[in-house]
Image 1: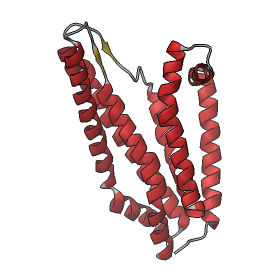
Image 2 (image 1 turned 90 degrees about the horizontal axis):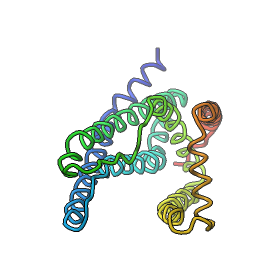
Image 3 (image 1 turned 90 degrees about the vertical axis):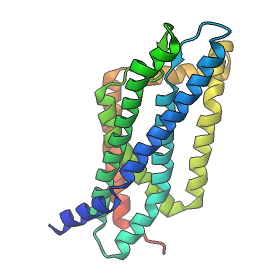
Length: 243
């Protein structure tokens, strides 16, 4: 009963953070739709152009950055407070996991609503009979469930790495982010303009990897679920508190 009470208290105290992710998704969505509007307005005088769902992409992108970086680096304080108050570490682990699941589901649901708005209302109104392109494609419910189950475990693991290695881990995460942010556009451009180049080959490999099919991704998902679950439990049981 004490464990359940501690978990409930942790979720109730931090529940309001869910609304920050909903707000981030809405803000990113509004910015993306505004940019898409100006792009459509500019190009419509020169050539026929449709509408692309930048609102959905911007909303998802902003939420992803806040969830992965913000929660990974910001969860350190929650862990310190929990342990300093002599509360069970497993209670903290379960409470934070459940809260992150709610964060992910709320953010994805908001982005889905933005996508419907773009595909049904904003896109057709701005495209004026031209194509409305959905940049995120058709996302299956299984992918959303898998993301909501596994991503919180990854974030909790990253928090543990930050507690243990501090700035070293921060700079490692920053390096990964910069590689994706700077390398992604280059790979995409190379696949169109220089199919035989190394960046294009990397892009082809990534495309093949992300389109392996349902069964391989289920196997990968189960493996990640078990691996991060075991790692999180083992690390948090023995992790030292640096006050």
